[in-house]
Length: 151
Image (tube, one colour):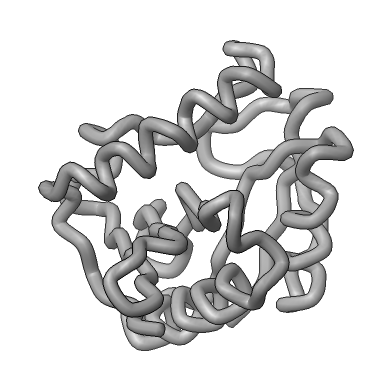
């Protein structure tokens, strides 16, 4: 598997992200959906990666700079047909290592609080993320779980 920075210009990643946003909208109330759209992911403060198995796009993830020391994980997604195959763990380990290289001392994230997101929360817990209060511009939301870890 190969992880690389993606400029979000290819139709395959655009379709992959569109499926992600549609899935989030189908299970999360609109006021609780915090996934960045394509333009949000193309901003200079965001670094976006894709993971491919051969030529097949199997996952993606990003970090968004919040300040000089703190970044947020965004747009973590694994192809639904490849869930629980180690792709998310490989990508998350890569993102954490890259965040360290970029000089961040903290990574935080927002994910869903419902049962659908339990595997995601378990993955983040496995990598040392702990539950925390809302950060950045987030507000308390019964549909959201906030997590953070020091690097």
